Image (cartoon, rainbow, N blue to C red):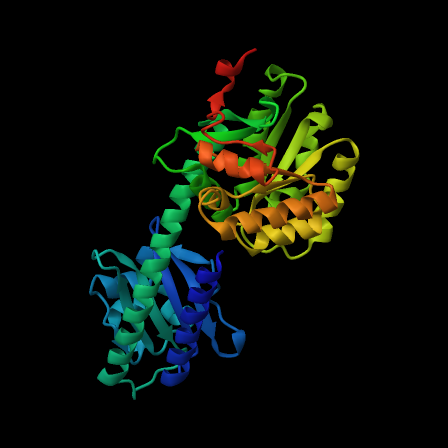
Length: 392
């Protein structure tokens, strides 16, 4: 349940409590109609003791709720034992039900979601039209909130279904972009990049961001890494393969098992994340045994924001990758050049290497050479290509 849905839950519960105490009822609840049953979704009760429990259900036809919706019972009942239709329901005498107020919750399309109800085991002759009008207002407000929540849940379920298909059916392919040592015109490595074929068409970043939203980030990232690793055997032995991974997936501890059996000295993990990490020591601990076996670590998007610099300082990467936002202005903006020069100097002091991403023009490449950035990737140097086109 997301933070937004938790907030909705709190609002509905506060609303039920307000209605129950305002009208002097013992129990207030919101029910949902589904599969011919009435399911209690939210319940507030006096002293916490009630025969009505969240998640419990009963046949819809045997409920006050259905009979209020179809007009067989009125919305306001002062004493259920005085209404013949109510006496046909076992609950009237079994609970017993005395006073009862119920308002159908209808969505904007006219669909009946359920009901907003409260009742007591004793009659209450003081209940009047003003009370039922107040109930209608509360029910309308709650209905709008629940309609938004249901729409969000449906969208989330559709997203999960779509992502499950992407993962289970591998509806993505891998392309490999060369990383060039520009002073020697030599390919030293390849970055594996995912390309998604599933509908709707969207960028890889969007797919990964959506996976994170619905708890499928680790599964999707690991599926992509597994597929990317299949290309390693087809790359020259003197090159490495760079794989993108988020700190969240690293912390789950499953990356090492996916990489097991592959030559760690030919692999590099690129930490890709644009938010601050809470505890870098945990990530470092996960990485230590892999780095001891030769795995290299890169921090992606240096210069794109605060998070990347925290990654650099805390994780002490082997490679710092300059973000494309720096490269786009490297030949025309003195600030970008000064910033890049500072990163290069930092890398020299710490023993890291620098790779420029997104190089597209000769002017950008010449500016990088002057700054002693000797490794780069981008459309100027080589486009991302399927492994079949790279067979050597």
